[in-house]
Structure formats: structure tokens, C-alpha cells
Image (cartoon, rainbow over the protein chains, first blue to last red):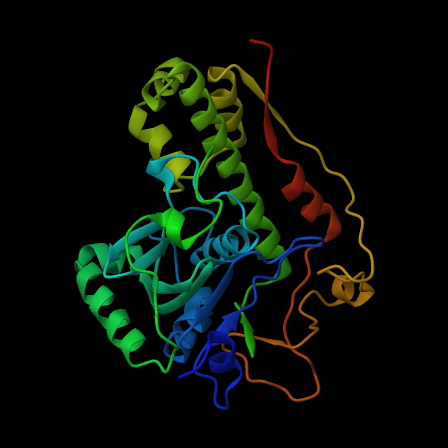
Amino acid sequence: MATVLELATAQPPALLKLDPALEAREQEWRTIYILPRVEPRIAALSTWQSHWKVEQSPVQQMDALLEIFCSGETLTFDHRFKPLNHLSDGIWELKTPDLRFFGWFPYKDCFIGGALDTAFNVKNHDLYRGYAREVAYHRQHLDLNEPKFIPGEDPKNVVTNYDFP
Amino acid sequence: MSLQITISPKERAAGRFVERVRRAVQKALAEEHAKSGLTQSDIARAIGVNRSVVSREIRGHKDLTLSRVAEIAWALGRRPAFDMVPTAVAPGVNVPPLVAAAVNPLSAHSGSQQAGLPARPGLSPARSHLPDELKAILNNITVIGSAA
């Protein structure tokens, strides 16, 4: 059993930390790690196209999400725009218009991503339940200290500065 | 080991700017809704479009034009503020004042690796840099309330 930090510094690492490339004088208040299995998806992001054909490409959406999440900004101003949604059994999705990023919170303000897909694929093939189960499976088999995740579906339990006001 | 997504500084600047503008609009809408009960339907009616258009624009499913930002601000009784100011950089902050960043925007520093790129020992791959002016824009987009 190990901590998140130990898993991220192990050889080979069991977790990879996403660097949000924050701007000058920005503090990283929240962190995002991924399972190594997600890295190919992260690497492929720059080739993905927006289903909505908007100017903000999926990789730009992910970059902006990383900045907002990790800089500790208010995550949502209105329930209609919420970028964080609970699925089941402590599995959450971080959302952008084109992306769905599935994972869990081992402790407050630390998200571990276990799967990434396009919103189009997820919705079109109804993959929410499948991804929730898949990520829960990988969470269970990760050599992470207990408790491995924060249970419940209240976003205020898993992130600080969740909503407005 | 940390990992950065593969994105050019130019794309990063643009993407973060778009997001910041949209969030400023979302925040203004939420504030006005809390204050006076104004809804997206009210905004849509005021500017003469279908509510679904405003909804898609605010959710990021449709591009938000500068004109539309101004129209929504007008409907909210606000005005958008926009400024382009140079950003101060200093040693010890996240974005070091590297001239190299301007010469080679994909040049890297400090210990992380871009996704999809092989690690190159000794070359310290990864962090890309925003041009100072664009960072300043991102930090200064707000929708300012006008006199009620």
C-alpha cells in the first residue's frame, strides 16, 4: 500500500501527475493524476476534433480545464455549467464540451483520472456506466492506501471552492 | 514524473482566453439570476435569438462571438471590459522570463514531459510558455456591472 505521491514517484510510476502549466503567480491548489493507461489518450488529444466544431479544440478544452481545476478557481457558477459530475460509487467525471474524464478523489482536491473519451462517444454509445465500472476496477487494483476514495456524491466533499457564490 | 499535454503556447493562450471569456459570461449570468431572477430565456428574448442558441454558446457547444458577448452583457445591464496589458514576470514564478520561449515557443524547462513525446534525458522537456500579453488578457477579462 502506498500514498499517491509514492505511487507517482515509484519506478515505473503507477500514477502520472498532469502538470497544468499554471501561469505566473498561480498556485496549484488542486491536482490531477492519471493512471498510465490514460497517457496514450492524453497524447492523442491534439489529434481529436471538436464534435461541436467550435474554435476551442479538445486539447484546448483539456488545457483550460486543467488550469481552472488546478488553480483552484470556482468550478461552477450554475448547475447547468458544472464541469464535475458524480456517476456512481465515488466515480466522477470532469467535463468539457467535447471530453469526458473519469476518475475519483482519494482525498479532497486530488483527482485521479482512469479513463478519457470524447463526449460524443460516451453519449452515443451510452458508456457512462461502463466507464464508471472500469475506473472502479482499476481503482480497486491500484496499490493505494485505504480509504482509496471519498465516497458520496456531494461535490463539496471532493473539491474546495466548488460553486458560486 | 509529471506530464504536460501536448499543446503549443499559441493554442494554450487561445484556448484559455476563450474559456475565461465564457466563464465570465456564466458568472455574470449567475450573479444576475441570483440578484433579479433573470434567465437565459430573458436574455435570449432581449437579444432576439432562440434560448437554445444562448444556451449552446454559454455551454461551449457553439462559439461565442465578441458581438454576442457584448449583446449578452447589454441584456444583463453590464458592459464587457477588455484590456491588453503586459504581464510582469519575475524569477521564481511559474513562467520564467525566458527569451528562449519567444524564440522557440516549444522550448522546454523543468522536469515534466509532454504527453506522446519520448523523454529526453538531460533536455528537461516540457513546459510551454504563454506570451506575456496573452497571459495578461486572460487575467483581465471580466464583465463589469453598470449602474443599476
